[in-house]
Image (cartoon, rainbow, N blue to C red; front, side, top):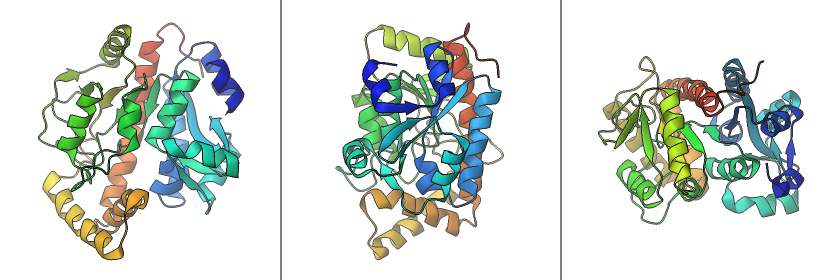
Length: 310
Protein backbone atom coordinates (compact mmCIF):
# COMPACT_ATOMS: atom_id res chain seq x y z
CA UNK A 1 0.00 0.00 0.00
CA UNK A 2 1.22 3.56 -0.59
CA UNK A 3 1.76 6.21 2.07
CA UNK A 4 -1.27 8.24 1.01
CA UNK A 5 -3.62 5.30 1.34
CA UNK A 6 -2.20 4.17 4.67
CA UNK A 7 -2.96 7.56 6.23
CA UNK A 8 -6.34 7.99 4.54
CA UNK A 9 -7.80 4.51 4.83
CA UNK A 10 -8.56 2.36 7.87
CA UNK A 11 -7.27 -1.20 7.42
CA UNK A 12 -8.19 -4.17 9.56
CA UNK A 13 -5.14 -5.87 11.09
CA UNK A 14 -5.74 -8.94 8.96
CA UNK A 15 -5.89 -7.05 5.66
CA UNK A 16 -2.96 -4.82 6.60
CA UNK A 17 -0.78 -7.83 7.40
CA UNK A 18 -1.75 -9.59 4.17
CA UNK A 19 -0.91 -6.56 2.05
CA UNK A 20 2.33 -5.87 3.89
CA UNK A 21 3.47 -9.45 3.34
CA UNK A 22 2.18 -9.56 -0.26
CA UNK A 23 -0.27 -12.36 0.42
CA UNK A 24 -3.42 -12.90 -1.70
CA UNK A 25 -6.20 -10.39 -0.97
CA UNK A 26 -9.63 -10.16 -2.61
CA UNK A 27 -11.58 -6.89 -2.48
CA UNK A 28 -15.37 -7.10 -2.09
CA UNK A 29 -17.71 -4.18 -2.75
CA UNK A 30 -20.45 -3.21 -0.33
CA UNK A 31 -23.31 -1.65 -2.32
CA UNK A 32 -24.55 -5.21 -2.74
CA UNK A 33 -24.98 -5.13 1.06
CA UNK A 34 -26.41 -1.62 1.40
CA UNK A 35 -28.43 -1.26 -1.79
CA UNK A 36 -28.46 -4.55 -3.69
CA UNK A 37 -30.00 -7.16 -1.43
CA UNK A 38 -32.76 -7.25 1.20
CA UNK A 39 -32.24 -8.08 4.87
CA UNK A 40 -31.15 -10.55 6.17
CA UNK A 41 -29.96 -11.97 2.85
CA UNK A 42 -27.46 -9.12 2.45
CA UNK A 43 -25.55 -9.98 5.62
CA UNK A 44 -25.68 -13.73 4.96
CA UNK A 45 -24.28 -13.18 1.46
CA UNK A 46 -21.51 -10.84 2.67
CA UNK A 47 -20.45 -13.30 5.36
CA UNK A 48 -20.62 -16.17 2.87
CA UNK A 49 -18.41 -14.37 0.33
CA UNK A 50 -15.82 -13.54 2.99
CA UNK A 51 -15.77 -17.19 4.12
CA UNK A 52 -15.43 -18.45 0.54
CA UNK A 53 -12.43 -16.17 -0.01
CA UNK A 54 -10.86 -17.25 3.29
CA UNK A 55 -11.47 -20.92 2.50
CA UNK A 56 -9.66 -20.28 -0.78
CA UNK A 57 -6.51 -19.23 1.12
CA UNK A 58 -6.93 -15.51 0.43
CA UNK A 59 -7.82 -12.60 2.71
CA UNK A 60 -11.22 -10.96 2.11
CA UNK A 61 -11.31 -7.16 2.21
CA UNK A 62 -14.87 -5.87 2.18
CA UNK A 63 -14.65 -2.15 1.43
CA UNK A 64 -17.06 0.47 2.76
CA UNK A 65 -17.25 4.00 4.16
CA UNK A 66 -18.00 4.36 7.88
CA UNK A 67 -18.32 7.76 9.50
CA UNK A 68 -16.74 9.29 6.42
CA UNK A 69 -13.63 7.10 6.56
CA UNK A 70 -12.78 4.49 3.95
CA UNK A 71 -12.48 1.04 5.54
CA UNK A 72 -10.46 -1.67 3.83
CA UNK A 73 -11.80 -4.77 5.49
CA UNK A 74 -14.63 -4.79 8.02
CA UNK A 75 -14.88 -6.33 11.46
CA UNK A 76 -17.85 -8.63 12.08
CA UNK A 77 -19.85 -6.00 13.97
CA UNK A 78 -19.14 -3.34 11.33
CA UNK A 79 -20.40 -5.65 8.60
CA UNK A 80 -23.54 -6.42 10.55
CA UNK A 81 -24.25 -2.76 11.35
CA UNK A 82 -23.76 -1.80 7.69
CA UNK A 83 -26.25 -4.46 6.59
CA UNK A 84 -28.92 -3.16 8.97
CA UNK A 85 -28.45 0.60 8.52
CA UNK A 86 -31.29 2.58 6.99
CA UNK A 87 -29.24 5.70 6.30
CA UNK A 88 -26.37 4.50 4.12
CA UNK A 89 -25.29 6.29 0.97
CA UNK A 90 -24.31 4.77 -2.33
CA UNK A 91 -20.66 5.77 -2.68
CA UNK A 92 -19.30 6.06 -6.22
CA UNK A 93 -16.17 7.77 -7.55
CA UNK A 94 -17.56 11.28 -7.09
CA UNK A 95 -18.72 10.76 -3.50
CA UNK A 96 -15.57 10.31 -1.39
CA UNK A 97 -15.19 14.04 -0.67
CA UNK A 98 -18.79 14.64 0.44
CA UNK A 99 -18.75 11.38 2.38
CA UNK A 100 -15.62 12.37 4.30
CA UNK A 101 -16.77 15.94 4.96
CA UNK A 102 -20.24 14.90 6.11
CA UNK A 103 -19.24 11.71 7.93
CA UNK A 104 -21.43 9.45 5.83
CA UNK A 105 -21.81 5.71 6.10
CA UNK A 106 -22.01 4.05 2.70
CA UNK A 107 -21.57 1.07 0.47
CA UNK A 108 -18.95 1.37 -2.26
CA UNK A 109 -19.87 0.72 -5.88
CA UNK A 110 -17.62 -1.10 -8.32
CA UNK A 111 -16.07 2.25 -9.31
CA UNK A 112 -15.40 3.30 -5.73
CA UNK A 113 -14.08 -0.13 -4.78
CA UNK A 114 -11.69 -0.02 -7.73
CA UNK A 115 -10.33 3.35 -6.57
CA UNK A 116 -9.71 1.98 -3.09
CA UNK A 117 -8.22 -1.26 -4.41
CA UNK A 118 -5.70 0.44 -6.65
CA UNK A 119 -4.61 2.84 -3.91
CA UNK A 120 -4.39 0.06 -1.34
CA UNK A 121 -2.46 -2.29 -3.64
CA UNK A 122 -5.18 -4.95 -3.91
CA UNK A 123 -4.90 -6.80 -7.22
CA UNK A 124 -8.12 -8.86 -7.32
CA UNK A 125 -11.73 -7.81 -6.83
CA UNK A 126 -14.89 -9.94 -6.92
CA UNK A 127 -18.31 -8.51 -7.64
CA UNK A 128 -21.60 -9.54 -9.22
CA UNK A 129 -21.93 -7.48 -12.38
CA UNK A 130 -20.33 -4.24 -13.45
CA UNK A 131 -22.24 -1.12 -14.46
CA UNK A 132 -22.17 0.01 -18.07
CA UNK A 133 -23.99 1.97 -20.73
CA UNK A 134 -27.69 2.26 -19.99
CA UNK A 135 -30.18 1.30 -22.65
CA UNK A 136 -31.52 4.14 -24.75
CA UNK A 137 -28.89 6.64 -23.59
CA UNK A 138 -25.57 7.80 -24.99
CA UNK A 139 -24.74 9.70 -21.81
CA UNK A 140 -25.88 7.52 -18.91
CA UNK A 141 -22.60 5.64 -18.57
CA UNK A 142 -21.49 4.09 -15.29
CA UNK A 143 -18.39 5.41 -13.58
CA UNK A 144 -17.43 1.73 -13.28
CA UNK A 145 -16.27 1.79 -16.90
CA UNK A 146 -14.07 4.83 -16.36
CA UNK A 147 -12.37 3.35 -13.30
CA UNK A 148 -11.87 0.00 -15.05
CA UNK A 149 -9.83 1.95 -17.58
CA UNK A 150 -7.35 3.19 -14.96
CA UNK A 151 -7.22 0.52 -12.26
CA UNK A 152 -4.68 -2.34 -12.58
CA UNK A 153 -6.94 -4.88 -10.87
CA UNK A 154 -8.35 -8.24 -11.96
CA UNK A 155 -12.12 -7.85 -11.68
CA UNK A 156 -14.16 -11.04 -11.54
CA UNK A 157 -17.81 -10.59 -12.48
CA UNK A 158 -20.68 -12.23 -14.37
CA UNK A 159 -20.47 -9.60 -17.10
CA UNK A 160 -22.43 -6.35 -17.00
CA UNK A 161 -25.87 -6.24 -15.46
CA UNK A 162 -28.36 -7.47 -18.07
CA UNK A 163 -30.52 -4.35 -17.69
CA UNK A 164 -27.78 -2.47 -19.60
CA UNK A 165 -26.85 -2.08 -23.26
CA UNK A 166 -24.33 -4.91 -23.43
CA UNK A 167 -22.93 -4.27 -26.95
CA UNK A 168 -22.35 -0.59 -26.13
CA UNK A 169 -20.78 -1.53 -22.81
CA UNK A 170 -18.32 -3.88 -24.53
CA UNK A 171 -17.44 -1.16 -27.04
CA UNK A 172 -16.77 1.30 -24.21
CA UNK A 173 -14.55 -1.24 -22.46
CA UNK A 174 -12.54 -1.60 -25.67
CA UNK A 175 -12.16 2.17 -25.86
CA UNK A 176 -10.89 2.17 -22.27
CA UNK A 177 -8.28 -0.48 -23.07
CA UNK A 178 -9.82 -3.10 -20.80
CA UNK A 179 -9.29 -6.70 -21.93
CA UNK A 180 -12.42 -8.79 -21.39
CA UNK A 181 -11.48 -12.39 -20.69
CA UNK A 182 -14.05 -15.17 -20.74
CA UNK A 183 -13.53 -17.75 -18.00
CA UNK A 184 -14.39 -21.05 -19.64
CA UNK A 185 -16.62 -19.27 -22.16
CA UNK A 186 -16.28 -17.70 -25.59
CA UNK A 187 -19.21 -15.27 -25.16
CA UNK A 188 -19.89 -12.36 -22.84
CA UNK A 189 -22.25 -13.54 -20.07
CA UNK A 190 -25.45 -11.58 -19.53
CA UNK A 191 -25.37 -11.61 -15.73
CA UNK A 192 -28.39 -13.84 -15.03
CA UNK A 193 -27.82 -15.71 -18.30
CA UNK A 194 -24.83 -17.70 -19.50
CA UNK A 195 -24.67 -16.08 -22.92
CA UNK A 196 -25.43 -12.76 -24.58
CA UNK A 197 -24.48 -13.76 -28.13
CA UNK A 198 -21.51 -11.37 -27.97
CA UNK A 199 -18.25 -13.09 -28.87
CA UNK A 200 -15.07 -12.45 -26.91
CA UNK A 201 -11.51 -12.20 -28.22
CA UNK A 202 -9.90 -14.04 -25.31
CA UNK A 203 -10.83 -17.16 -23.35
CA UNK A 204 -9.01 -18.71 -20.39
CA UNK A 205 -9.75 -21.92 -18.50
CA UNK A 206 -7.61 -21.76 -15.36
CA UNK A 207 -6.77 -19.19 -12.68
CA UNK A 208 -3.12 -19.44 -13.72
CA UNK A 209 -4.02 -18.37 -17.25
CA UNK A 210 -5.84 -15.34 -15.84
CA UNK A 211 -2.77 -14.43 -13.78
CA UNK A 212 -0.51 -14.77 -16.83
CA UNK A 213 -2.78 -12.55 -18.95
CA UNK A 214 -3.00 -9.92 -16.21
CA UNK A 215 0.72 -9.79 -15.53
CA UNK A 216 1.52 -9.60 -19.24
CA UNK A 217 -1.04 -6.81 -19.65
CA UNK A 218 0.43 -4.72 -16.82
CA UNK A 219 4.03 -5.39 -17.84
CA UNK A 220 3.38 -3.48 -21.06
CA UNK A 221 2.82 -0.40 -18.91
CA UNK A 222 -0.96 -0.43 -19.20
CA UNK A 223 -2.84 0.61 -16.06
CA UNK A 224 -6.29 -0.70 -16.92
CA UNK A 225 -8.13 -3.57 -15.28
CA UNK A 226 -8.45 -7.09 -16.63
CA UNK A 227 -12.14 -7.98 -16.65
CA UNK A 228 -12.72 -11.69 -16.08
CA UNK A 229 -16.29 -12.63 -16.99
CA UNK A 230 -17.45 -15.75 -15.19
CA UNK A 231 -20.98 -16.93 -16.11
CA UNK A 232 -23.45 -17.93 -13.39
CA UNK A 233 -23.46 -21.62 -12.45
CA UNK A 234 -25.47 -23.53 -15.10
CA UNK A 235 -28.01 -24.78 -12.57
CA UNK A 236 -28.83 -21.18 -11.59
CA UNK A 237 -28.69 -19.46 -15.00
CA UNK A 238 -31.91 -18.12 -16.56
CA UNK A 239 -32.55 -18.18 -20.35
CA UNK A 240 -31.92 -14.80 -21.96
CA UNK A 241 -35.37 -14.49 -23.55
CA UNK A 242 -37.09 -14.91 -20.20
CA UNK A 243 -34.89 -12.28 -18.55
CA UNK A 244 -35.49 -9.86 -21.43
CA UNK A 245 -39.26 -10.11 -20.95
CA UNK A 246 -38.88 -9.34 -17.26
CA UNK A 247 -36.56 -6.40 -17.99
CA UNK A 248 -39.05 -4.87 -20.46
CA UNK A 249 -41.74 -4.96 -17.79
CA UNK A 250 -39.41 -3.54 -15.08
CA UNK A 251 -38.30 -0.69 -17.34
CA UNK A 252 -41.91 0.31 -18.00
CA UNK A 253 -42.57 0.33 -14.27
CA UNK A 254 -39.48 2.49 -13.65
CA UNK A 255 -40.61 4.99 -16.29
CA UNK A 256 -44.08 5.22 -14.77
CA UNK A 257 -42.60 5.67 -11.31
CA UNK A 258 -40.20 8.38 -12.53
CA UNK A 259 -37.11 6.51 -11.33
CA UNK A 260 -33.81 7.58 -12.91
CA UNK A 261 -30.15 8.33 -12.16
CA UNK A 262 -28.30 6.23 -9.60
CA UNK A 263 -31.63 5.01 -8.19
CA UNK A 264 -32.49 3.23 -11.44
CA UNK A 265 -30.26 0.16 -11.16
CA UNK A 266 -31.31 -0.76 -7.58
CA UNK A 267 -34.96 -0.22 -8.54
CA UNK A 268 -34.74 -2.41 -11.64
CA UNK A 269 -32.91 -5.21 -9.83
CA UNK A 270 -35.45 -5.15 -7.01
CA UNK A 271 -38.36 -5.10 -9.46
CA UNK A 272 -36.86 -8.00 -11.43
CA UNK A 273 -36.70 -10.03 -8.24
CA UNK A 274 -40.40 -9.33 -7.60
CA UNK A 275 -41.48 -10.09 -11.16
CA UNK A 276 -39.47 -13.31 -11.32
CA UNK A 277 -40.67 -14.64 -7.98
CA UNK A 278 -37.12 -14.23 -6.58
CA UNK A 279 -35.55 -16.27 -9.40
CA UNK A 280 -33.17 -13.43 -10.27
CA UNK A 281 -32.28 -13.02 -6.59
CA UNK A 282 -31.37 -16.71 -6.39
CA UNK A 283 -29.16 -16.41 -9.47
CA UNK A 284 -27.56 -13.22 -8.17
CA UNK A 285 -26.58 -14.91 -4.92
CA UNK A 286 -25.20 -17.94 -6.74
CA UNK A 287 -23.05 -15.91 -9.14
CA UNK A 288 -21.69 -13.70 -6.36
CA UNK A 289 -20.49 -16.75 -4.44
CA UNK A 290 -19.14 -18.28 -7.63
CA UNK A 291 -17.16 -15.13 -8.41
CA UNK A 292 -15.73 -14.96 -4.89
CA UNK A 293 -14.44 -18.52 -5.23
CA UNK A 294 -12.79 -17.82 -8.58
CA UNK A 295 -11.32 -14.53 -7.36
CA UNK A 296 -9.60 -16.29 -4.46
CA UNK A 297 -8.04 -18.79 -6.87
CA UNK A 298 -6.81 -15.99 -9.13
CA UNK A 299 -5.37 -14.06 -6.18
CA UNK A 300 -3.44 -17.17 -5.13
CA UNK A 301 -2.22 -17.65 -8.71
CA UNK A 302 -0.86 -14.08 -8.67
CA UNK A 303 0.98 -14.76 -5.40
CA UNK A 304 1.78 -18.48 -5.65
CA UNK A 305 4.55 -18.46 -3.04
CA UNK A 306 2.70 -16.38 -0.46
CA UNK A 307 -0.72 -17.93 0.03
CA UNK A 308 -2.16 -17.26 3.42
CA UNK A 309 -2.60 -20.22 5.73
CA UNK A 310 -5.98 -19.80 7.38
